[in-house]
Image 1 (cartoon, rainbow, N blue to C red):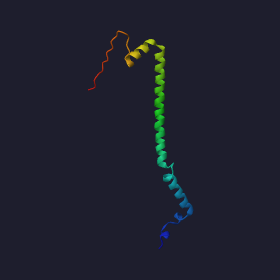
Image 2 (cartoon, rainbow, N blue to C red; image 1 turned 135 degrees about the horizontal axis):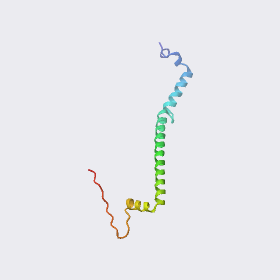
Image 3 (cartoon, rainbow, N blue to C red; image 1 turned 45 degrees about the vertical axis):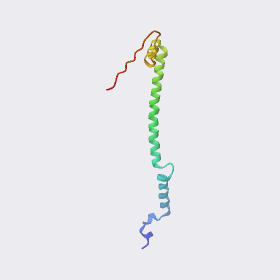
Image 4 (cartoon, rainbow, N blue to C red; image 1 turned 90 degrees about the vertical axis):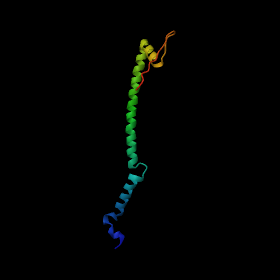
Length: 100
């Protein structure tokens, strides 16, 4: 009994073999195979989430900037708190709370 006779007849068809070979090539060997497609999709979703986050942060910064530029007292408060600026002949003390 030959080895070829053990293979079912539909697997001996040239068209079926061609389709199977094509599927194996496209699913595993091609540059755009299934694992690469999945990795790219995950990366796309992550980048879209980052984009939304940074757009939200940009809007917050724009809002804060508008507030600072419109109110001189708020600008002075911001400068004193953030950059520790002070008026002449004025002492500034920074109190840091320790984390225990």
